[in-house]
Length: 205
Image (tube, rainbow, N blue to C red; front, side, top):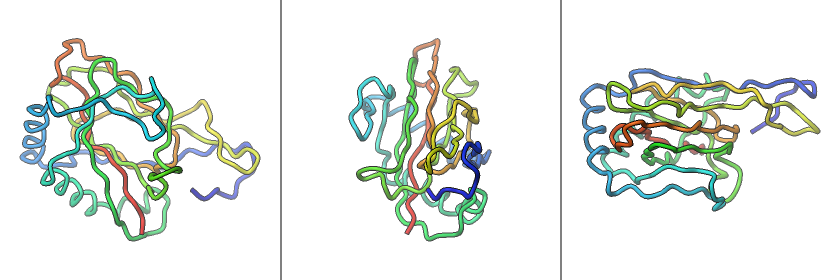
């Protein structure tokens, strides 16, 4: 991420894009039904640096047809999304895709999705939200932290943008930005009542 030309101490609020009604009703119904029926295939999530007690959730590598459909729809909106994220147009190469179930007690502490190991080529993070209707969980907000320039580097502040996990919406932001997911509460403890996402990362050429 390039540093803007601003005075030290200036607070930087990062651009993000949230699009509602992202999937047509039939595609959303198919996605939901297949994910809800795949509970036994989900595995506990991890992080790239193997830190413990940093992330609690369950993940699934989606079947190829579900992944392809999401990738096609994401590629279609990138010409509009990229400039809204304050970036010049660039060729999109790989789009990673996984499905996450945030069940009762799930969270993801402050982290960044890009910068080390195999994550260095990630330009944007996307998070597509879906859940049973009516919504049966609380929490699970996405916090996108502001930065300040300190000693020539970006440093996280205590202020942030709070994004509600709206059903059938998708959020895009720069992968290098610090963010977290607040604790999810599912009173019923039922898998189908969890906070579900199709999430992943967009690489630039």
